[in-house]
Image (tube, rainbow, N blue to C red; front, top):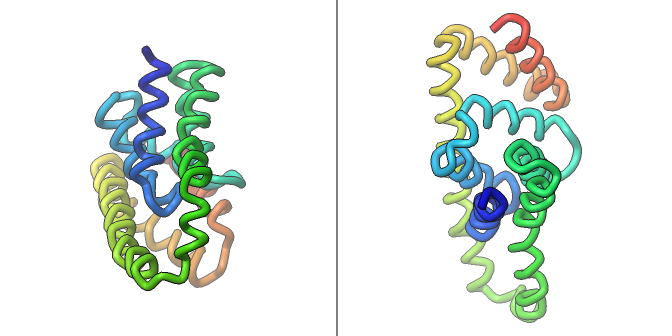
Length: 175
């Protein structure tokens, strides 16, 4: 039964998460944290940070890790397959149609209408992480981490992987 749950936890966000891995992360969070209760929001945030610090697609890394935690090696394989299966199926079934109509104004408009939805989903996820951090370590520490991360990434052009690794170290040793 756990393998079916792992499959559904990653297949459904793969089907509904238009825009790739980053767009499906809030949907995966909903399945993993709220629906099945496998992790807390903070644990999910840590898995997300770890996945972001490694090269490659974020959704498959998270599916592999969470699948492994819940069901071992077979759970990891199930999670990864469930993550890539919707894209694989759609590419096979709809690839020819998309190529045929890629210059259609209706297809271009559809893409423009979906982009704000993705932005809202990412904003909600950010707010949830901020709220959890605020409750866990307080407003000043959270604000300090946010400002310092912004400065490091945007002003001083430090690679985000180093900022994430630094935040993990600070959280692990001082918080």
